[in-house]
Image (cartoon, rainbow, N blue to C red; front, top):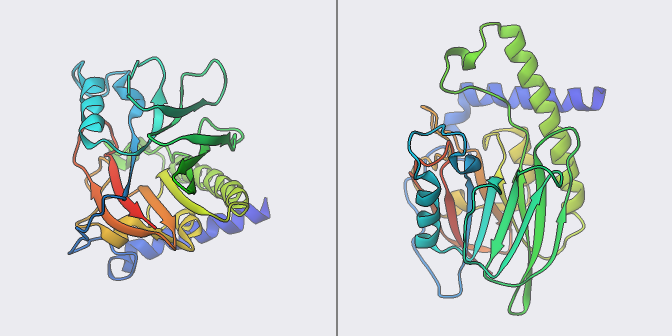
Length: 280
């Protein structure tokens, strides 16, 4: 318990740091210029929390699944990562290879990896005591094998459309945040331990449910390139909130070359899709 409390303390200190001087230090909250180079051999990677394809009608209208499908088809990523994938919404994405994992055989919500290139190995980290998870797929592209991780870390359960995040009692809000931070820290440790075993090319992407100033991000992004920092422009906002929160990421190993990054303004979920063009 003491071990996780120390990690929590670190996260809270980092959060305070953001509120006071985070605007003035890296990682940047706003990028003035972007990289617009591109090669025919670039690998196009998209990450998208689709919020169950709007199954419970959080957004008015019946065409959200179709809009998401059209957007993905138009952008045509080589590798497509979904968080909060909902298997009851029949999405006919025309990819020859895929790995879809729900937490249990009866569950309908999970993570998905689609690929235009052969998937030769898959796995799930099976995070404990949570509906969140981390999965991976080893993708064969010509002579390269690229490990792709799809992360959906613990939500902090903040109602961003409500005053005080929908919590009148500040002590309950703090308790909720504390529990979320502790779970995120534990999940991060599980990921880092697993990741150490892979020495080749890699992509680490998904919904971290925390910002680029958090302990979670700094641990996972260590010795990696953040594709937004390398090639993005603007705020890189990925979550529907008045403040430009960037909580969805595409990271690569340090040997990768990031040629482009895009954060789109699609409003078909509470998250926006992000796409990066990567090469080695």
